[in-house]
Image (cartoon, rainbow, N blue to C red; front, side, top):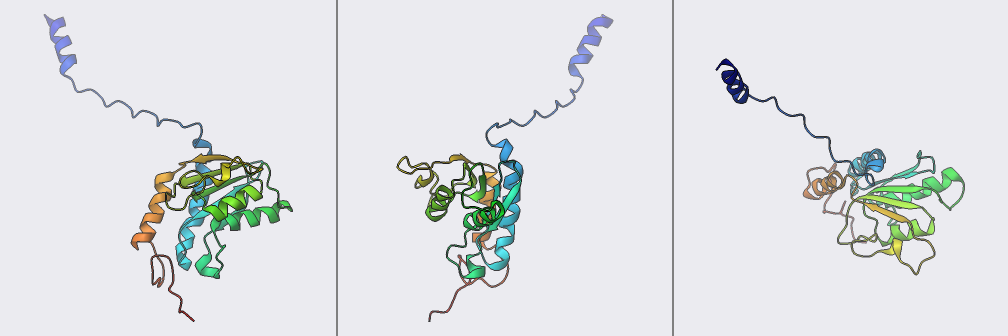
Length: 194
């Protein structure tokens, strides 16, 4: 009878919580988490100048950062001042030529058509992006410039890396939660018409 009571007590004793399962590993996206965090750090600096928070880094063949950029259209008045273009320019200066074979662009937002063209023309091996851009994306969402079979170079595309963090940064900016200085519009400073 004592044995039966012991068994009964064992069943009614509170169970220790089971350890949380390990997060599911994603062999495609996980290698790009640290570089995407570096791109996010660049993006976080863009609102200081009224720019949309998009950031990018270019990794050399060895994985080191050879180019960085964040949107600077408002800061510089340059319509081509997108994070991707600025990071690609810096990377080309670092390697001493325009061909970025073996390199990877990591960017917080899916590239637009201009940036997709720059990616193809610079011969980057790969583009990794965070948030999809359903309105202007040119790496699979609206267009797929980077993988167009009619072009002579088609980089690999990896999407969705830290997508929630990347999208959240943009959402906060456009809601007005994350802006520095006087902006005037949802898209940056209002400039007088001349």
